Length: 240
Image (cartoon, rainbow, N blue to C red; front, side, top):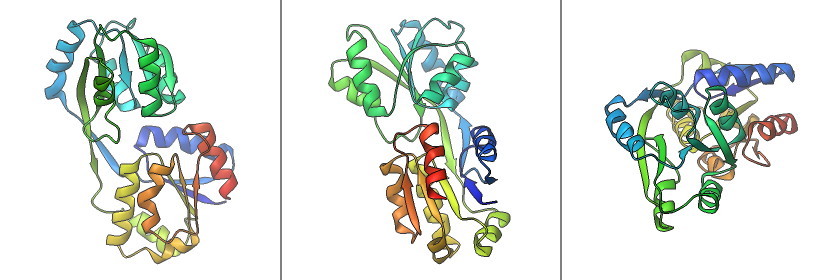
């Protein structure tokens, strides 16, 4: 049985691990980002909600989890990035009207469906790759951009993960965010484990996520055909 490294936060990693197990893979879960809610920004969020936004824009499950503890009105329309994020929003009782594959296509979707005369609410992490609010501002929209959490990068690999990599028992790793890919690459270099990657494959949700990983000598790098879980799983099967 081939063992795949999952670098996502624990909750998402466990559901992904189950999906991989069904396909015959073993998993090692090592979250490389620790999620820290920024409760100090709750008043700003509540103020934005008082402006009655025509829609809320969300790109991650973490934002949804935090919103679910604050928002009582589940009828506000939601736009999300990713089908899985949309599905999770619906399980929380939120009203999702559409989802996009990427942050950039979300901007296009919102531009086509929303009225620039009414505000939008964008909830996000402290570190982002695409400034959705800024892109929508350029198109004439007013967007409240509220930071709900920050992701703190791991400073080292666990002893178990280092041992597995050195032994050559880890033929592949999955990456769902550019920051995680950056963190992984830096830690591999810090621990002096670069050469071991000549026998490993990286499976990434997008080309942008794969870019920092190319500093390592992977045997192969695979990109999901489209940035969603279905195609990530297909990329895993294609790689092995």
